[in-house]
Image (cartoon, rainbow, N blue to C red; front, side, top):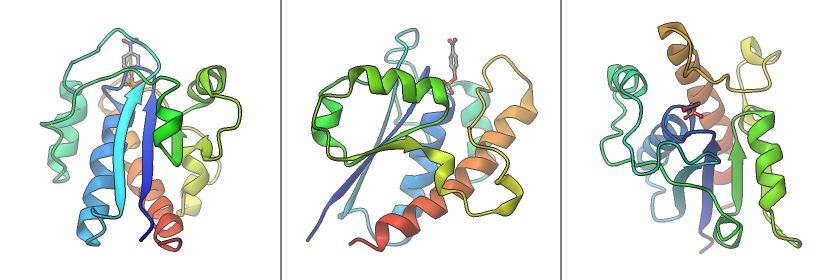
Length: 161
Ligand code: 4NP
């Protein structure tokens, strides 16, 4: 049986990509696919290595029933391209940084998360905006965008299993 691996990447790995990690994992679990789909997250910046998700992120996620207690920030590296079939960036800067470390010959999929959005309400939005220096609304928007794109990505991957 195929096993498909997905790595979500943002800048700090304390707001957007851990949100994607927790939301996507919960959808994978709900569909009983956790033996077939591996989920992880990482950041391109090293300021928060080993830290738990930002408290604003985990508080809003908890309101919607997502648990981030076990997540810790780590750095993405070239070796991740050996392991992950899908490497999913939150914004264009994430993708540029990933392209810089992508080994020649990577056969997986490197792209923007919102390419998998389903809701037409978000069709004008191509990135998950960095909420770190903004207010609460930005964190709620991250969750809205991540829930929608996670459903789309899971449909896309489940169709290959
Ligand atoms: P993230 O948000 O990339 O969604 O985890 C950020 C977290 C921290 C910083 C920037 C963005 N920072 O500059 O420390």
